[in-house]
Picture (cartoon, rainbow, N blue to C red):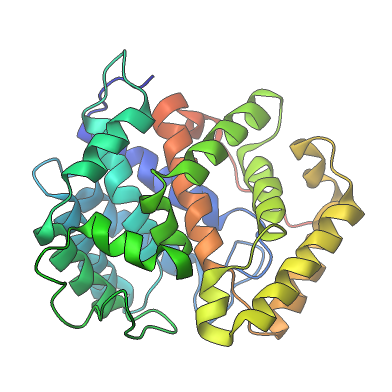
Length: 301
């Protein structure tokens, strides 16, 4: 269950989730152990700070939160650091504002998604076109550089894009994966794992289970499946019984080796990273796990 959260608490949880995501050793992504893809940790931290007021603004619709957060990000860092994060976290923030002691986050989120309208779709289209993510094009799901179909809500647009995009899949399924991830993170942290280790273990497992759609859009399905296979090999090699074991020096070195390998291929599992951030945000909204984040993880090298 989730009691209604005040604006400042939602903004703080959002920034904490963004900071946790980029401080987690996620092979192929930007993180504190290695920059990549012409972006830095500082870019992500600044993006979180400038977008938080809009993500948590109860006076804004979900679509306007998305557009204004992306607009603020581009004014600050002039690159697409957080489109997927913003698309996922805006409805989560709205759901947290309307929670009650007898309402689950899933129930509140269902009501938020059901209330999305055409204006939300228009604002989100503008944000996506501004961010111009890799592989952006037009297809049967619509061209985001044009007006969405007159009878489409943002949820309609996401359902149309769901077969080819992990972010859209979350809208179409009521954020099923993110909510499941949030439960896993909460359990692993309660069992003694540091938040960044719990998130790293979750990321690696999820990377081994399905192709990352950001990689598919940018490089095609063959490379996405190659990354998935390497992640599965790494999961088998590490043989993690508990998420906390990922903190062992030899395991972190293994992840850093995988990180360098994926980056040498130009492979950035960016969609999955966005899901990790939103999963941490959801867990923080329900359980305040952000209180556990006290220090920067140490580089194993």
